[in-house]
Length: 409
Ligand SMILES: *Cc1c(COP(=O)(O)O)cnc(C)c1O
Image (cartoon, rainbow, N blue to C red; front, top):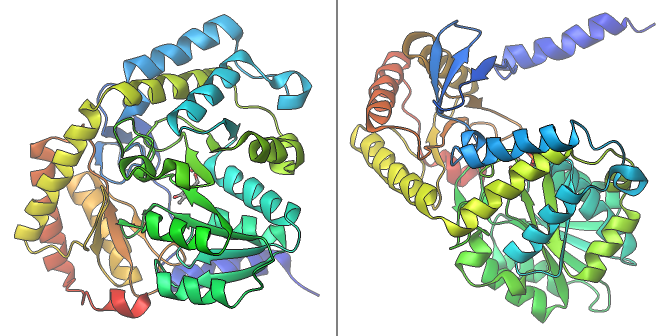
């Protein structure tokens, strides 16, 4: 007979042996002093270098005030699902803002970006008769699960490889519905997809497109609507998906698209229907954050400047920063155990917090430290980070070969 406890322990031991057992830091973020946070592991203040609160909007007074005000006025929770008493005024206003932001007819907010991808892709794929889904090989786990749950025929195309995508589209029955699912900014490598070319292929083969702009909303384009805005392509993409939890600094996820498409997902997606609505405070905070970033470039500009400064500093110091097209600076370690060790050393000896990124988030052998400079990081912090990385990489003998990246891809 199976010994359940032994089985649980053995599965964890396997991860530990490989050096990819996940240990969570325990932080208390300091509103007003971001990116500083108190670590309850070390007991000291640390500088956070791996936050997805890319613009520090989680502490922006407009956001925190809107949230506090909403709680004071309407209380804590939404009180129900969207259908049964939980469809509140703040939520409706947020969806109007999102539709306006992406120049779409409608938007639908869900619990998180993950839930949005899972619920939307599984519903789109299962509603469209005999649909085929084409999915970039580096797509996020939430898209992969949504596609899996749609039970559609699925083809994975090599990362950002237009020729491979076209060959797959060409080989399929022209009469069948098709959906191409991809991201704009790929957050573990920092590269950006050829949105225009993918939309051209979609037109040629009568496919619809589903673009995850989770790492781009708030960050790119004159109003922070993402890479599709920056490139003037928002009207070419069928569905734009985003999160309210990264650059917008709060929580939640959404899709935007045509009235009919959004209404179909609203009406059929279990992951949207059978769960409590996000509370008014979160939606009010997200709305304030989006509105601010629609009319103000200041955070984006300072952030871009800091990314450039840190990238230059690290390269000059000989730190193996991977080539990036975005705000994400991945530093290659190429070994799971060393990656974890480097992260521990940075935390314990330098009060610098960078989480190690290991398999399955990235392919084995391409383990890395992923740095996300925000507008709130100072020159002093960047200098300290560079100095610490040089010390740690020397001590641990980390000298990765960048060609592992090509092999992995
Ligand atoms: C983080 C992430 C999501 C999920 O968004 P959450 O709001 O954190 O659930 C979806 N897609 C990508 C590419 C992501 O990195």
